[in-house]
Structure formats: C-alpha cells, structure tokens
Length: 162
Image 1 (cartoon, one colour):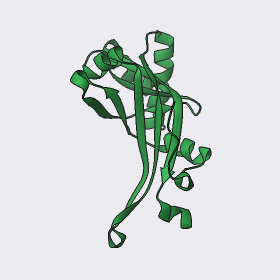
Image 2: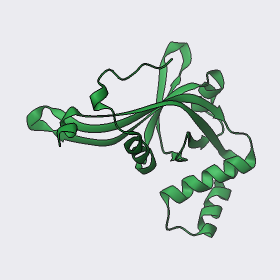
Image 3: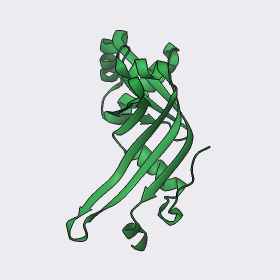
Image 4: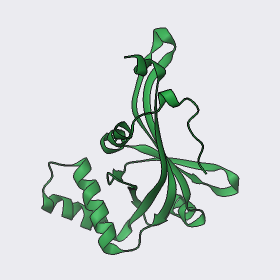
C-alpha cells in the first residue's frame, strides 16, 4: 500500500524516527483540501511514543472541515536542516507518517491529550497553571487524533558517512 523508500541506505532507524517525533516541536499536517488542492498546515503536536500523534486547534475551521471530508493524511517533521552552502546541499533528517485522522469526541481522551501536549511545551509549568490555560480555551478547543499506519525517516547521505 505504501511505497518503499527508494534509497534505503538513507533510511533512519526506528529509534531515530521516534526520537525526531518525540523531540520535534512542529510539523506539517497534509490533508486533502477543497477542489483537489492539497492543504498542508504547520502545527505543534504531541507524539505518544507508539502510533498516535495529537494536534489541537479550534473546533471549527478549514482544518476540521477537511478532516471530516477525508480521513487520510500525512504528517512531516524536520529534525535537522543544516545548510552546507559550499556543498550546495542540506544535511537533513526528517520523518513522514501516513495514517488516518479523526476529530476527537471523548472529553476524557481530549483532556488527556491536551494535558500531555501542554506538559510537552511547558514542562516547568504547574498543574494549576496548565489546568487554568486549558480551561480558559476548553469551549473552543478541538483535538485531532492521527493513527499512524506507515512511517519512515530519511537522512542526507552525507550524514551516513559521518
């Protein structure tokens, strides 16, 4: 169903793929947009360390409309992008995941996901601060769950030599 990476020697090991997802702060979610145009939107996220990624946003808007329209998506995170001008290249590491997206409905599941996301982006924050921030946005908060079906990571061939 999913294509194999053409240049297999540039593939990242599973541990490196997970490390990029765990340490990344943003990525690009690609959805099927209107009139056949792709819709790719940069988002912060939380990765559960296994096979799920979570995104937050408003309950209403284009992103949510497109998720309702088609549940297939991809998500890309760039873990490294070191420009090397004299070589006319970039020493990169990136991950791309393919899977199914859904608008989360269960309030306990939403609360758990947004708390984990809040802890990721503000680990020094107190429980009280985190809960106050979440509660202040709760009425408009929408969460998207992404179930990973296929994932791969790639690195520049120059990094393999090092």
